[in-house]
Length: 241
Image 1 (tube, rainbow, N blue to C red):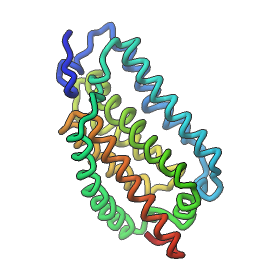
Image 2 (image 1 turned 135 degrees about the horizontal axis):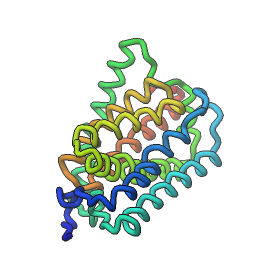
Image 3 (image 1 turned 180 degrees about the vertical axis):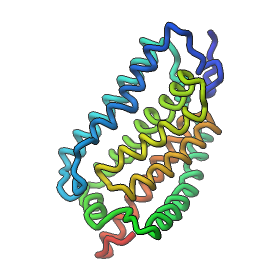
């Protein structure tokens, strides 16, 4: 079956029956394992997390991404374009950067609405944790989140849930719910709701562009802007962003 290397095509998400097991295993590593790894983390984890733990977490997430890539290439025998991971272009990166500016506004609006309902979207310890990271570690976290989370929760999860269920609605909503949920144990319910909303916007972007690099650029820059705001707040002697 021919594949277009310019993005996700309908042909790229139409599996044969013999290929159904591989996407199920892939979804286990893309969605279930990240969810399981967050279970049992204390709500005040940001107060006690160390640089070593952060680096270990990034290694685990990259390992999951590499496992999923291996499943795509070796077991499914499909190109990475089947999850929108095509050759990066300047246009995709520029589009992602522009979208990130919109996403930061939407995130701020979403956070304000959630807080207006009496739900906290964060506390001082989280800002202190980020500001206390070396800048190189902050960059690693931003790059890791941009690439791995978009590969696992958008590119792979959306296409494979869609093809297995035959429903684009399920393909979109299931990863969004899990993406928001995995943020709850570490960051709290309020932050998880904001992350879920951001996941929804990123899902719509992926369905629109079908180019994962646009999502990666948007996600990484969004997180980078949030970290930058926390760093500036810390330099000013406050944890308020």
